[in-house]
Structure formats: structure tokens, C-alpha cells
View (cartoon, rainbow, N blue to C red):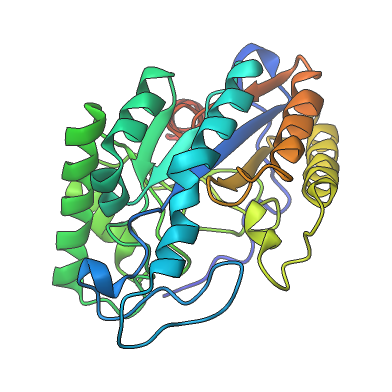
Length: 293
């Protein structure tokens, strides 16, 4: 695969967001609970990483399953309440098997006006996956989420690493207008008629995991707000987009949810910011830049 290390160097596109917004902000809530690897679910092994790094081998792991269970039982409610208080719509990036395990949650997100997009079938990397198997996984995930959400998803994000053929398979499927399988920019870009919306691991609550650097709630909010302030300033002259990654089992904890509330309060104090689901950001970008790139 060839790599594009130049990007928009020397010719950054001007802002195109609705109502003259300086910055597009995308909140992404990852719905993975029920899709983590689990021998009890028939998988080949158990998930090994949460906030403790420990893998139970050769036997079911009720402890790990219970950790993941916190998300749909408590964390989800806190997150959607925080978003609703600021009239902010998010993208719920959802594993197919997680949707099957928590259909009421998926339908609630849709009823609240949020996007539900695809995050793979299981919560797993696609690196090294055989092409035929990956094609089947993409189709199965899309069909499952469309049935449960009652709205066909248009976005995809693989956990961490994709395979070299992932984007081509998404295009081949025909149901996807964008993917988030990139981390290389603060600006969307086109791959033919397909939109790439770069994601981010730094402005992401995953950094509450061991070694990630976030401990107190303010670690998250301070860092995300600093990123927002910089992109907002740059957005006066060039197009900028910010991704903020959330997980129901992580930011939804009682001592952390205040960080999301602080971020929302700070962002929504700026009237010339567009908080939108990724499907809307992708559609806007394709409308203004689809023929030019």
C-alpha cells in the first residue's frame, strides 16, 4: 500500500461547515459491550484488557464480563443525559454482536436522534483477516445494525488495525459513505466518492486505561478542552474537525462523567461550532469537496 504523508500540505481547504461554523465536533460513543471476546460466548479466548490487564485462559471469565456490563447498565444513561442537556448529537459506533445483546439501547439512541454506525461484528482487529471472511463480517454487521436500529448505517470503524482491503470492501458493499479508519489528520478527505473521517486516540477516554495518562476526570476534560481551543483557533482560516471518543463503561463511571459534562459546557459556549453525527459531517464534506479531490 502506498502512504500519503503529504495530505493537504500547502493547500488546506477552507471551512465549509453549516452556518459558518469554525469547527466540526464529533462525539463518538463506542458500543462494544457484549462483543468483547468471551469463551462463554463461544469465542476462542477471553478479552484480556480492561482497566486491569489480566486474561483468564481456558475458562469463562465472569469478572471481565461484569466489567463490560457496567456500560449498558449504568454508563450509557449518564452519557446520553449529558449529551441531551446540551442538545448534542453523537455517533454510536456499535459492534454487531453488541447490538444483538443490547437492542433496547440501540433503539433508544436512535430515538434520541443519534447516529448508529458499525464498529465490526466482534470487538476485534481486522489485521490479517482473510478477505472472504472480512467481507462476510462487514455484511453481517451492517445487516444486524440496520435491522435493530431500523435505520441503515452508513459509517464504519474497525477496532484499531484494519486489513489492507477493508476500505475497498466497504466500497464494494455499497452501504457505506464513510469510514473512520484513519488517524492522520484533523481534516476529512476523500477516497474517490468515499469520505474518510479521521478518528483520534488522544482525545479519547480510553486513556483512563492503565498507562494511558488519565486518572482524574479533569485529566480528560483539560486535555480535550485544550485540543478544542487549538482547533477552534485554527478553524478560522482552514477546515478543522475534532473527534472525541467515549465508552459507556469508561467515561460513564461516577467519578468521570463530570469530565464529559465539562467538555460539553465549554464547547457549547461557542456558538460557531457544529456538533454533529459523523454521517452529517461526511455528507457535508462530500457535498463541498467530493468533486474537487
